Image 1 (cartoon, rainbow, N blue to C red):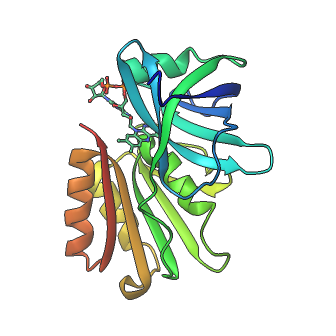
Image 2: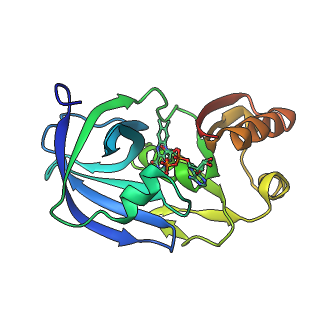
Image 3: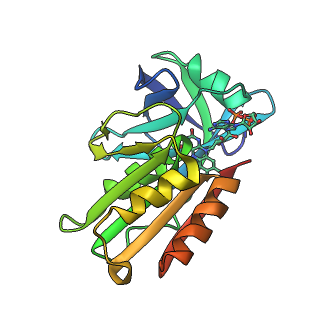
Length: 207
Ligand SMILES: Cc1cc2nc3c(=O)[nH]c(=O)nc-3n(C[C@H](O)[C@H](O)[C@H](O)COP(=O)(O)OP(=O)(O)OC[C@H]3O[C@@H](n4cnc5c(N)ncnc54)[C@H](O)[C@@H]3O)c2cc1C
C-alpha cells in the first residue's frame, strides 16, 4: 500500500439512516469514472476494505461512497469514525466490469452494501432507460438516495419475488444487476432465472 496507495480526503460525512453513511471524498488522482468501480481503503493496520464509488464529479474530483455500517467490522467501525479533513489511503479503482447495457429496463436487486454499486449504474445510464432498485433491508430506506429511486423490502427473497411480480418490465428487454451479500445474490439469481430473466449481472460482496 505504501508504494501503490493514493490519498483521498474526507469532505463530508452524512448519516442517510442510522446505518447507511454517505462519505464524500476529494480524490484528485482519479482520472476517469465508470459504473461499479471500487476503491480499496486501508481501514486499519493490515485491514483493507472495498467500497464502490456511488457517484463521482469530474469537475471537482469529488466522489461519494455509500457505506452500510450497521454491523461490527473493521470497515464498518472505520467508516463510522470518519471526519471531514481526514486523509485516507486507498488503491484503485478496480472493477468496473458491470456497465449499463442497452436494455430499456435496468433492475437492481440486493442489500444496503450494494446501493453504491446501483447508484453508479443509475448515474451513467441513458436518459431513456428506466432503472428500478429494490433493497432487502430491515428498516425502510429513503425513497431516493443520491437522486436514485429506491424501494425497500423487509421480506428477504419472498419480498423480492412479490415486488418483481408487481413490476411492468418485459424480461426480453431488461438487464438485472444483483449485488451484496453472497447467499442473497445466489438466491436472487435463482429466483429471477426461474421468473425468466435473460440477462443477469451478479456480484457477491460479503458472506
Ligand atoms: C467489489 C466490492 C465493492 C463493495 N462496495 C461496497 C459499498 O459500496 N458499500 C458497502 O457498504 N459495502 C461494500 N462492499 C462490501 C464491504 O467491503 C464488505 O461488506 C466488508 O466485508 C465490510 O467490512 P467490515 O470490516 O465492516 O466487516 P467484516 O469484518 O468483513 O465482517 C464482520 C461481520 O459483519 C458481517 N458483514 C459484513 N458486511 C456486512 C453488511 N454490509 N451488513 C451486515 N453484515 C455485514 C460479516 O458477515 C461478518 O460477520 C463491497 C465489497 C466488494 C468486494
